[in-house]
Length: 282
Image (cartoon, rainbow, N blue to C red; front, side):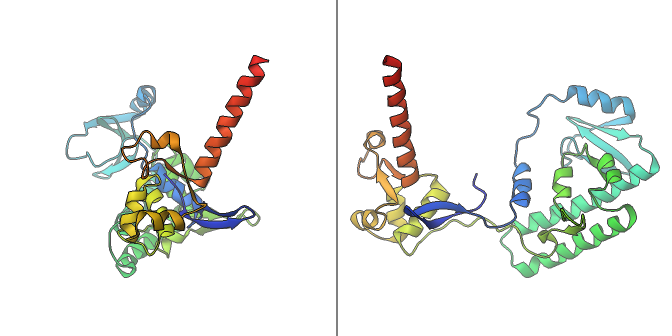
């Protein structure tokens, strides 16, 4: 997964494909973390810690299946924490309980905003969701301080969504002043739209790498509506033909193409390997 846009840049060696930043990298990484698989670590020991501190437990079932593993939720005014197939009631003091309830409201508003931004809607349609997030966040900060303050960190740090929540704030390194991030006022997520047509072979190459993960000449030809020779000519210096890879394809002319970076790095790697073999023989 690439964080940024694939585009052409020019350096002392000429034009090449590069990754260009298209936003706040920290926020993008926080969004990516949400896509990682859950339950990849055995949490039984952690579960036992929470069981000792809790009251009743509730089977998750269909009713609470929307609650993520290792997150807090509010049920009938009480705080519960999900661990695998059960929700465990949390016996926290009143202040901590209210902090958790407030952060759950912030998380809900944030997730609603993220959900709507992922849909094919206009920027105007997301304004009510941004307004809601601002209201809930401001109310929380007035009562309990910033999300990253120590009291809130201690109350909510065991929630799997806490890293997502702290991404709402940024702190100036010099003044230590905490401010809101762009998601409160700007659209930070664009829904994925497949590119169906490009103006030229260069744009087709970018689309091919983005959508196919490789240099797919046949796909580039389809996108830009140009024949094989024209595409190869337009991409001269940006792609190279690797005969070894071409042997693995059905059509050797269409298969085996790599970006310049891939081709040259593979070539350098092969030279290094051969040099090591020669040194070993000596």
